[in-house]
Length: 595
Ligand code: FEO
Ligand code: CA
Ligand code: CA
Ligand code: CA
Image 1 (cartoon, protein in one colour):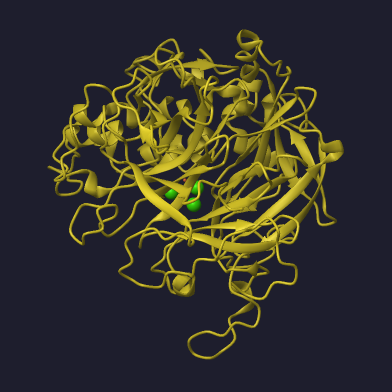
Image 2 (cartoon, helix red, strand yellow):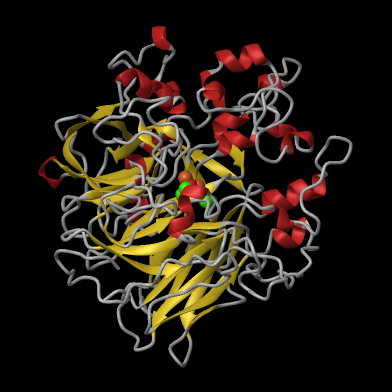
């Protein structure tokens, strides 16, 4: 790693070099550590799941019982009687890749075959898997287990909060507006103090189509989120096989057919990993947008905030503050807390101060005459409400992490290749053509998660070292250089603190893009929030994103996710189908990771 003024006492491992080999198809960790593939797409989850077929010929019913694709956010939930030996891992499956099928995704007479669409739907969602240490102290998956469970785009879910039963959630198939089928694009996540998992619905708009151009333009709940017009949805064309993804209004059907189906996505979904019978619940008080994560900050007095990024260019950072307080042990009462509270959006002012602006019906112009006749519409159209309040458009906010002692909040702004074009540069988003991204941090007034004022600063600008020269010998342009003390990286995305206050940073960029050649493959790094030193801990296989991070409660086991590897990982034999995978990292001497 590079010259660093103050050597960090928090970072106790040797830096891993950037991986520039175009054929690299493995995971590399520092000396004294080992990385082992733990849970891959297609692995058995539910008791009756068949063994995964290497030619991807498993049908959708098999996929419904096996691990989904594109592992992303995750969290370890310990069992209280043996927390460092036994737990449940909840793992998001964000989307799907063509190798899900033997010969990729097909079109027959302009339509997607229903069997393929069902398999794709079954490969989205969440896996819950039981994990425990064996007699030799190694972490293993437990199968069969009563806790092992797949949740997908086909799983029935309940609705909580102000939108439950609302007419804007009713469809031809669900006239009650209270029973939603499935979850989509589960990117990052969060958890509650009462031991539930919060999976977040990110780019749900890509799954829907509204062919009625006039209706689409007038319907904020579609247009402001980028629901497709024309003849095909943006991602997989599911609407050609499954009518509920065609959100074109149909006056001949009750509730306009499926015009409200997109309104049923973009929420936080609460899942109780310890109760396999419990139905997931969409918590509408959190507001609706392309939500990356929902990360808890818990005050000493039981007040909470859940922070979220809306990961699109020029979108906002939000927090949801429940009205009630968390009371340890009062679980029946705690489980009602996420249905009532205040949604805020952030404004970052040039002087380093910031404001949380409340998205409350009747205040700040959020009234019927401006298209917000009730709090339900404010939440459903959170982006439009935030526009009206003058929130700060950010460079694609992704994960949030809260320091375990100071409660200082960090957020990754992954990149924005249209900054300076679609939105002006500003103090918080200072670079035009921002290909490498930045990490911001702030302190809530009084350290109170519910505060409405904060002080912020840029923690680092990612990118190449100042003074770096390109392959042509010329200085690297200013918009591609950063302020990193230590190992360079681009496009921070995953972000989490361990108990000692090490900040772990994961990256997501196209490692084949010209500006990324010097960065190598995607990676996991660790930063010291005090000295700002950054050191590279792990590099992944070619073509993947490194994401999802969680630990056993003693921080001696770490799990990360390798999403959409491109070559043949995890077999790494040059011919097998690549599979998104969870990887377990431990130290040879059994010590705490990173020390
Ligand atoms: Fe799914 Fe914003 O990453
Ligand atoms: Ca992400
Ligand atoms: Ca990303
Ligand atoms: Ca991703």
